[in-house]
Amino acid sequence: MNTARRNLASRWRAALAVALAAAWLGASPVASAALFEDDEARRAILDLRQRMEAQRLAGERQAEELRRAYDENAQMRRSLLDLQTQIEALRAEVARLRGQDEQMARELSDIQRRQKDIAQGVEERLRKIEPSQVSVDGREFIADPAEAREFEAALAIFRRGEFPGAQAAFADFIKRYPQSGFKPTALFWLGNAQYANRDYRGAIGNFRALLAQAPDHPRAAEAVLSIANCQIELKDTAGARKTLDELIKAYPQSEAAVAAKERLARFR
Image 1: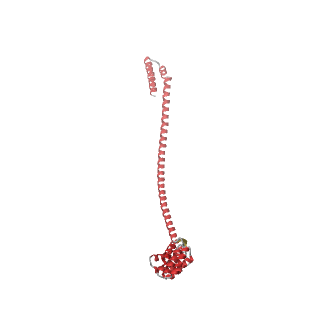
Image 2 (image 1 turned 60 degrees about the horizontal axis):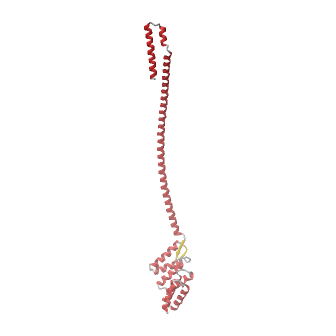
């Protein structure tokens, strides 16, 4: 652009010099006008104008593009701010929901724990009132909880050495629960309480009742030996010998049979 201006200026200076020379030499006005109708100069001027117009239009387009870019950038910034605001709102909502989930988890855990406690309480109460399977002297059977408690209470009295109280407790138990699975064992301990109370005949009767009801009971051999002991206390030596012989024959592998053999040896 600067080169074109310099060329145009040079042409104008040349034309001006020619005009001045013509005027100095007394040339006519027509000749002077001819000097300024230089086609090349006009073309240079037109070319310069066109280039300047093109540059102006290009500048305007560039400015428009910059304006649009600025507007788009501003819009993008606003969108980013809106998006950031939404993200923060979502984070807050997630935190709130997470807090609700944790609270619900705690409440659920509390409910489950209460349900478990209630179920255990109900089960415990049912155990106290519903019949359940028990095991005594190696024998299993179904017994009422109250029945089991009364048997254990009577046995506890015997173990404390309170034999009159134990005799009364076991006698009452047998009357209250004549079909109880505890009865053979109750008869055994009742006979022992009577033996401790020197009620030998009553003890023999209960030991024999045990043998009649459950001859295969784990304590049957001990009951036979206890009968022999009662007979010895009653000075019934012949009856004791017979009982001991029967014990050895009926229960040869029992510990009671070993004791029976020792006592028979002392009789001889």
